[in-house]
Image 1 (cartoon, rainbow, N blue to C red):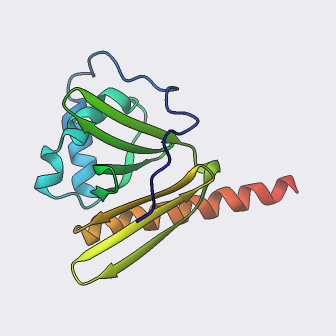
Image 2 (cartoon, rainbow, N blue to C red):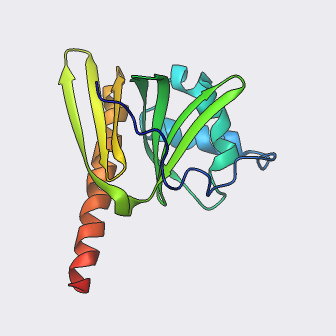
Image 3 (cartoon, one colour):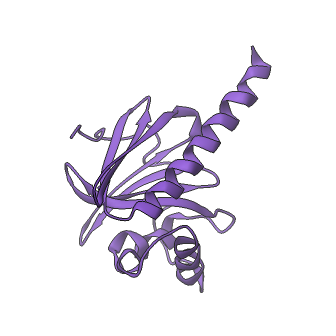
Length: 157
């Protein structure tokens, strides 16, 4: 499996401190469930950290929870950006990616295990997962957004 890039160019451009608004975790969990997250995903530290970095007007459109070469983490697609989040006690890694740097997404499946690779100009983000519904929703949303980005750029040529 390929390495995940060490650091995104936009890693420190979002807020990740302070208390989230009341009810933010419940709203985020509801959005995660709507896009295929299972109960186990809702207990992970990445999920509980999301209210600190998801803006009030931002909505989760797809996620992939799973393993990557450096441990366990999640790819989170919102209506505004894509996040790669790995949260451990006393340590966090979060890369923020705009849709402009995303080149595409690949999904493979062998039996119950699937791999989603988010291809970006900064490098690839491969995540192995067992939740195929979640992975499929994430891939569908990324492909749709990439097509929208490409069609809006045609007017610039």
